[in-house]
Image 1 (spheres, rainbow, N blue to C red):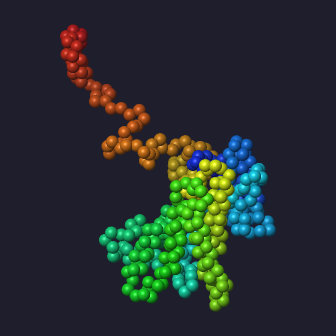
Image 2: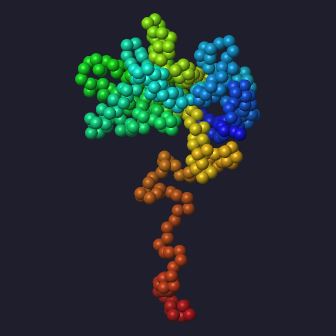
Image 3: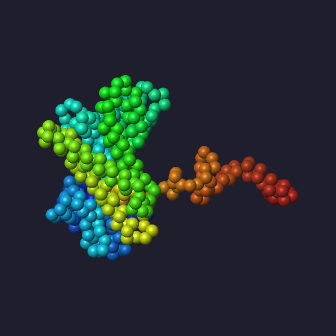
Amino acid sequence: MATHVLQLVFLGDTGFKFPIAHFPTTEITAPELFDIFWRCVGLLKDWQFNVNYGCFDGASSNRSFVKLHFKNTHPKELQFTVPNIYDSNKEMTFIFDPSHEFKKIRNNILKSSRRQGPRHLVHGDHDIIWHHWVRAYEWDLNTNPVRIHFKLTEEHLHPDQTAKMRNHLAEEVLNKDMLYLMLAYQKSLPTEIDRWHLNKTIELLEQTSQLIDNFRDLRPIKEYDDTRLHENMNILRWFSDWEATVMDDDSMSPEEKKRSLLSKETRDDLISLILGFDRLCKNKLGQCRGGYIIPGRVNSDIVENIFCSQRSMSNGGCTNPNYTQYGKSINTIILTQGILSKKSNVKVVNKSGYSALPYHMHTGEPLKPSKKRKIHLLSKICNAKKININRQWR
């Protein structure tokens, strides 16, 4: 019996999107995924849709799928890019989803503590532990009448398994609002040594907040010399220097080095995200005159939204639909989108609606007036036309 669904979605640079295919599965292997992926690329090419990149999360089968394309070299050396099987003049770039990457970074910090555990992130002589986030939140909650980071809640600091899957909860503890809060909290500490302990935590937030801003930005990148691409490379350089600092420390055992860094999967996904996106922009802007890339669209959020719609909108809000229900609902999810967008550029005329609505009309009279009301209306008409109402009524 199928317990999972493999969903493939096409997302164009202009925002045009549609689900290509879905397959029931219990789990999928890298060779099977290789065959399905490239068959979809070929079929799309037959219909004049050119595929420049693939974006997916960091599941083990996806990692193995990417490695199949690089036999004797590391994907980093080729910026996670290979020739397109169906067009030798074009390339295919593999990018790991930025939304999942932000959640992985948050989860690594969430596990980081001075106690014995899976992580104790260390950068030089500085600790990067989750306790810093908790103390900053408590200080903001108890000290400031107007909170600095008003979106921060207990659910951000102590997430359960469901909350860990939500993108906005991960991004809101790594974005610029969190950076401003941590800087204000550092200034409030009484001693220099206490403020010193937060230095690398703040440096990490400077990198993650800039990365989130860049990959959520809806402004198009039209030139390869865009400052956002340079900022991404500087962020990658910072994480690489952190890894080199820990690996060159001879006083630490291999196990301690492993605990002192983000997980290897998280570091590899970060490299793929930044290098792959840089190569994608280089290829796209070099080949297409007037072409552009919108960073905020380079993610797999559309796939997650389809899954959420399957669970919450279709089949009576079924949280665990079977494959038959999934297949019947997949097109309905696209077709039942709201006809009015709350973000549309229309003028609001009152609290109840918009200035233009489909088939929108008002009438001052009831649709089914009473007999007494009918006589009253008839008398008004007759008086206006100077007709004897008694003769007209008979």
